[in-house]
Image 1: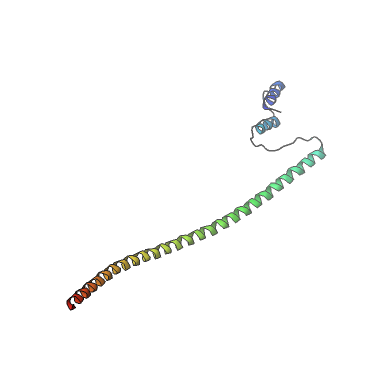
Image 2: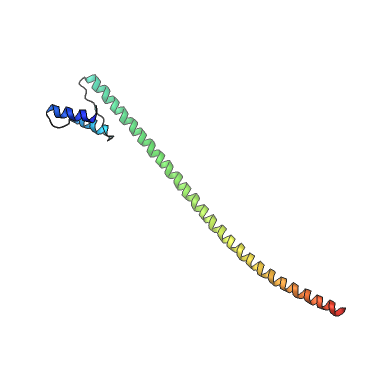
Length: 135
């Protein structure tokens, strides 16, 4: 039944208001969740419907338990990931410190290389000068 029919029926009934069942139908049409209900006059049908409702509630309880278990597993995995990320961060910091030492050592070697080049140049110049004197 569409919303217009529900409202027209309520107005025609002379009550000027929707009954509970029609109110829930109207809300359901617009996607608003409502409690499921059924009106049963026959005791056997009422018992069957009650069993269906209890079964559905039991299924929902089991689903909720599974969700809680899943959330616990997700929480454990998240903690493990956090530990792993901390380890990666610590390793990265150590690697950065080692790289800083390598750069500093390279700079020192470059300075020594320049000094050695200058000393080698002086020796060569002196050796060339002695060779010229000897000639």
